[in-house]
Amino acid sequence: MPDAVTMDKLVSLARRRGFVFPSSEIYGGLGSSYDYGHYGVLMKENVKARWLEAMVRERDDIVALDSSVLLHPRVWEASGHVSGFTDPLVDCRHCKRRFRADHLAELECGVRPSKHPGETELCDLTEPRQFNLMFQTRIGAVEESGMDAYLRPETAQGIFVNFKNVAQIARRKPPFGIAQIGKAFRNEVTPGNFIFRTLEFEQMEMEYFVPPDEAERWYRYWIEERLSWYLRFGIRRENLRVRPHEPDELSHYSSGTSDIEYLFPIGWSELEGIANRGDYDLRAHTEASGTTLEWVDSATGERYVPHVIEPAAGVNRSLLAFLVDAYAEEVVAERPRTVLRLHPEIAPVKVAVLPLIPRNEDMVGRARTLYEELRRVVVAEYDDSGQIGRRYRRQDEIGTPFALTIDEQTLEDETVTIRDRDSLAQERIRISGARAFVLDKLAESWTPPKGD
Ligand code: GAP
Image 1 (cartoon, rainbow, N blue to C red):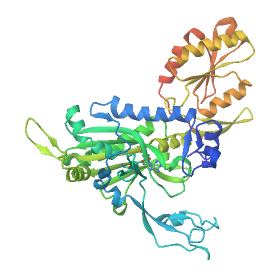
Image 2: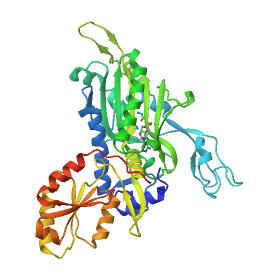
Image 3: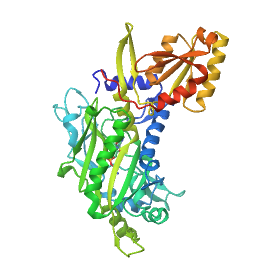
Image 4: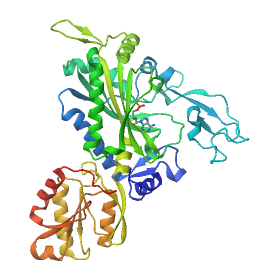
């Protein structure tokens, strides 16, 4: 992790530049909830698009799904979430705060933040109680005849309950996968650490159904695949590690799980989990629903319950890792600059078009024409407000890889300068070739510049 990055700096940049805002801010904010502004939305869309490309578009063995947030409540009984998706919590009778019993050593006392809960004389903690993380709601217009339901705490179960539909229609033979991106909700009590842990977040989950005797091989395969996805989009290798779970950490369904961890400003923490879920889910839903979820080979009559390998990533947490990894502060020509060196495919805006002198109508006219041409093919931005230096700084802070500037010379010889965010090199190119030039540049392979 670059030395310069702290969570406070990121929160400040994210807010200043319109990536992420605290939710319901005018009402004092809602803990562990955030809203995404223009650049946050564009960047989040890029993260999801890169995941979907890698999972679905570039492969023949994975299909897409978009299941409901609200599922039949029995899904969550069968999956084990109603009985087992809990955190042990303690309440302090003195400060009235609630804490994760298993995280007390990392948490702060509600009265004396220099101490951990339970450490001061005034602390009066209850015994730990199991607290279910699912948000409950009710379906139905009439309260008495309604049905209790849950907002999904993971997207995975929507995939398992659609196994039969998809397997039949997609006519896939194991190994094959079903990929889904969507919102999940958890009533998390631990402090959020910005967008690392929130009440509402998006997951990118893929359930890969395999013959039972191939499960271990595919589990290893998906750990490597997912690790290389983060590297492909610019996360530095030294900031990533794979951590296999200890036996006592494993979820009830898992015979093996490894976390891909990232060195966030809060220390090494989970970015994504890859689990070998065995046949737990398909068997549990078969038993509870009465519908047999298995794979049958129509030619040979062979049948079995596939095992499942699950790479489960978070959109928001990935976005945070991309921001942390990209953040740099440096001094250029004796002036400080903050820059997000995002991979061009993750960066929210690809190119900015800037007329050097905003009052010059010829420059503005040329710049607008070029901008209109570029925005048809990439996310582009036009900016004619303020000093050119300030406009460059602004683009640096949102991570725009290239800026095209229209100046006096453009009016004479039909050329523009293209400025590279990372090297700060400026090159003159013909305005007529600018679109092709930018597209070629964006298609070039990109690795994080050294020296942070
Ligand atoms: N289906 C398995 C599953 O949901 P998980 O490890 O609980 O596994 C997968 O969640 C990923 O979802 C995590 O690695 C993380 O990136 C993201 N995630 C989980 N809880 C989150 C939260 N409260 N806020 C933000 N992201 C979260």
